[in-house]
Length: 421
Image 1 (cartoon, helix red, strand yellow):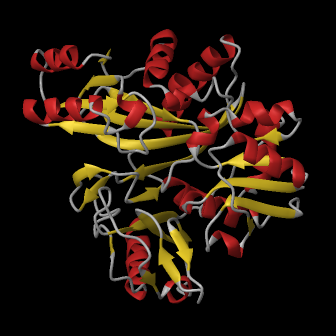
Image 2 (tube, helix red, strand yellow; image 1 turned 135 degrees about the vertical axis):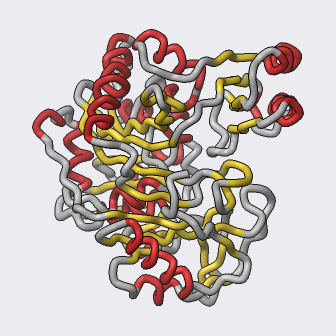
């Protein structure tokens, strides 16, 4: 089969690396891809935010299956468009993708399906939002309603921070995504990520992970797209995993099916494990990044066969298997991220890092120059992933590998996996 993956980050590199092992795939393509992905798939430079370009490429290459990595093509309705031209795709429809694209939509699903989540209110007027802040306890959480690349969340510790976050959102910091603001109660606990593979009716646990969102050591500084992750997380016991599957994932699938928008693809629940049990922070409708890297390097089952089972609605007969080990990934990012940063600085030592047994470096924001040097080309640039018997051994391996990489314009957190925060 001919397969087209959409995306250019470390998540898509991990996906292509995993898919490249499938004997069922005769040709693996990735659009637009990156230099790391080029080792596993043919990279084709198109704009994946433009549905017509994706359709044209899929038809030209006679693609059998399209696998979107990031959320924007899904929210843009690429699955619906591919269906119109009879090309199979892995992921939810435009309507089902609202679970990530609109926090208002997700909160409405939570209410109808009795899914535990934080108390919240939505505002489209700045003055009303500020008034709400003044009449509720702090800290408090302010979120852009739409997609903001993982950066539209501010945990305000005091009233000034909260008002500033609201003003920034309404003044266009997050574009259209911030024109409506969600103000949510602050939940105390430990964050965890739960992933399920869904075929519209059935859901099977994919794996769980724990992400480190904040930019600085000790879980300080602004939120990012993710600075590191590990899988599995000890905070999600077997009982909690069953709780999440039965009381979060399955009720969501039932409610989506009732609406005529059955959910097929990856349903990713971002959770807060509070003293009163797990509560939903948000849904994403695709693999997380960097969680994807630690999940797929642990997967024993064939990823492509699992995806085909979801697409063909036969998950009730599929069993996923994972290695009994821990995977941990550390993100190397450009200095200044998640704010302004420079690109096109040379990175060396990636091959030396990859030569360490148990280590795989996934490319995120990279490109090459005319002399084939690897250059930085984004905020999050590399994802150094290690697999070992336990989390401490995985940490040691990952940071050993990082020491092999020479990049004067990069930084990373030193405490990924060291504490659950």
